[in-house]
Length: 254
Ligand code: DC
Picture 1: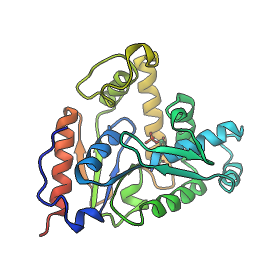
Picture 2: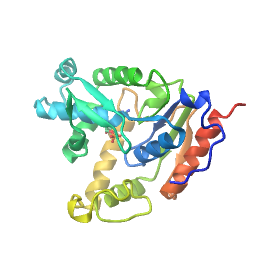
Picture 3: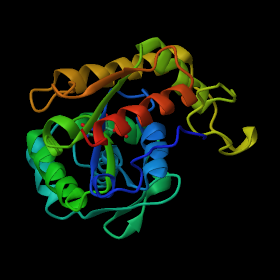
């Protein structure tokens, strides 16, 4: 990815900064976060991966996903660690590398369900604040700019129309080489998963949107000081370029 060169790239303000990226499922946050982290020399931390790891634990332990108390108890016997990697974080659940399990549709659905409970969110927010306490990070999720790091100097709210997000997700899971393919070059057609029906993906995405936006505890919303970036009509390159410009402008000495 060729990004615009940033004149403030190696200054102290960049090294210690926190870039918060929030937005709905399928907006392209992970890809954007990865490119921004690479461009500015920051650590990329995916908070959604932590919710996914906990959801996997709940599924394995056969804890009902609507039982807040039982889920809360499960947190007391769970450790989750993120190890930053080039492409994505390695996620360690109780010491086991579970990265390969986290995109499974049942885990995706379970993560969306367990994340509505305040006790789970409080626990996660604490873990995430500890992870990012030193700064020098890009963290993406749903509540990073509003709850986890409300004082983050740079906040981006990345959005796109639901149909566009659904289409991108469809192409990501399928065989397409869309301009906005989220993981370019990942795997060959024969080792990629079968593409589920477009309608099913869109339905699932809308259900997750609904939960994210309407839960009582820290619903998905842009922080008042977030810069809105709507990538509906953008290619990946354009969205990354726009995000780099936003970060550079926020960090530029005034
Ligand atoms: O970003 P993702 O799709 O990997 O997130 C998985 C789920 O976790 C998603 O359904 C919403 C939830 N989540 C959240 O509630 N807060 C975050 N900061 C990150 C993710």
